[in-house]
Length: 231
Ligand SMILES: *[C@@H]1O[C@H](CO)[C@@H](O)[C@H](O)[C@H]1NC(C)=O
Ligand SMILES: *[C@@H]1O[C@H](CO)[C@@H](O)[C@H](O)[C@H]1NC(C)=O
Ligand SMILES: *[C@@H]1O[C@H](CO)[C@@H](O)[C@H](O)[C@H]1NC(C)=O
Ligand SMILES: *[C@@H]1O[C@H](CO)[C@@H](O)[C@H](O)[C@H]1NC(C)=O
Ligand SMILES: *[C@@H]1O[C@H](CO)[C@@H](O)[C@H](O)[C@H]1NC(C)=O
Image (cartoon, rainbow, N blue to C red):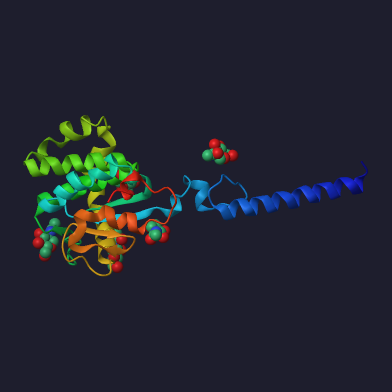
């Protein structure tokens, strides 16, 4: 093969490769390495996932029941496969302008629990761990035994104490609270009640117990979970 033929061959191969990668990319589901798109980083169809955000405060009973009972269905069914679940504590809390401290609707105990839950959300990024820990806290809160959270939640779930206590004791949970309060303040429309459940930017209002129906309706991907097919 002479030099001319060789470079033609190289160009042809390059063109075919580029074409292939473009087609590949447009499918959005395969493991192309040509361009960095959402599909490259996340599992297939990750970009079709429905955003489910739950704004709540930690000592509100209807919030606790929603988290413990209704949200568990996401994990028990396979709904979690099509959902980006985001828990946002510190609803109904506000930052005092004069001293930059936070006040919570249900008092300092609620601020403390909000802080604990903020640490949970920020130390562990796997949503099932976040959920289990926060659900555990909320369960104890309802039972009136929140003081045993270390043994009954952290230890029971096998989560390391040290980073968690660091986060909580150094006030990071409260600092994070300011971010959550800001995020909540940016909601439009503003929450009228809690839990305030938002599906892809659409609040579901008082119908939050039926959130799964809204999620299924909002889903645009092909991997429809069984739970969305049942009447
Ligand atoms: C995608 O490509 C990367 C790197 O080439 C590889 O490590 C990974 O296993 C591939 N994933 C799938 C689902 O094929
Ligand atoms: C900050 O100010 C608020 C409202 O003025 C007050 O209730 C609260 O006790 C103050 N907190 C601290 C830590 O000084
Ligand atoms: C707490 O916040 C400080 C300052 O932002 C940061 O350096 C530190 O890593 C945080 N610690 C934890 C446990 O989150
Ligand atoms: C929250 O928002 C206020 C006003 O928009 C801003 O000054 C502050 O820096 C924000 N705080 C955080 C923690 O994002
Ligand atoms: C879901 O949230 C992500 C990140 O917050 C955002 O980029 C994406 O557009 C949202 N998806 C929908 C369908 O609203």
